[in-house]
Length: 270
Image 1 (cartoon, rainbow, N blue to C red):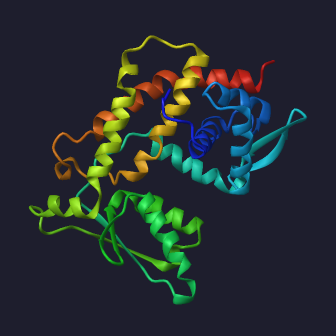
Image 2: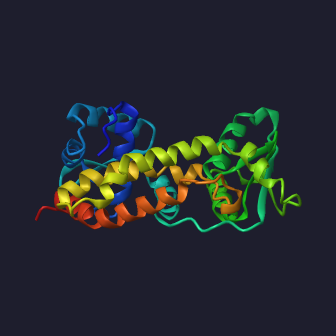
Image 3: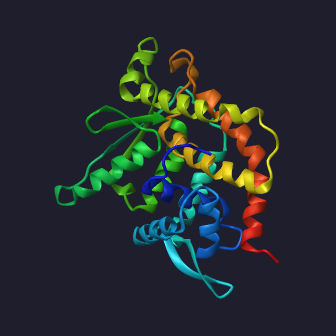
């Protein structure tokens, strides 16, 4: 587990991770079980309740009833988002080709608030900014980012083009300006430093696996969205992304099954 302070936002991240990992077990999680789960992660019951209240207010969670008890479930409109997240988080990145996806968008002044939403979607799918109003990403994200924009009814404002970059010798210097690779490398290195010692640890009980697995996924799940998936030849020397991804996949494969079994026992103890 992480030794970071369990701030209110971090508590909410842990709760969202738990719902994402076990959303298919029974469709909802009783508040009593959620308090037990988060207690295993060091979160006090009062903090769980306040975090759930905030997530419900943000329309991430909705009220439900399970076996006659008060429970919560993921909001229905987020199901596709979490399915999309599974593909992004738990599948290894494939190396990008030399094709690029360019995006530009035009929003009427009367709807200027949509500009921020479009930028957020593009950044979430690894786009970098070439110039004001022009965004770039490896072409492999085209289908996923198009689907996300369509779900948010933003696709009509965005135009996409595929292209190749002619100055291959200068491209490495350019991508260092289009993306903040130094910051991303720090995130990857921090992840490795935090979790590397666990790679040689002994097998864990289901409860202990749960206590390790949920924080692990919580720490990792934002990184695949920050990483544009650039070809290796465009990345700085000693790029830590591959090592971090391999470490996550190794620990995830080791802990996912026993952690899921522990969650299943809590949700259906019969």
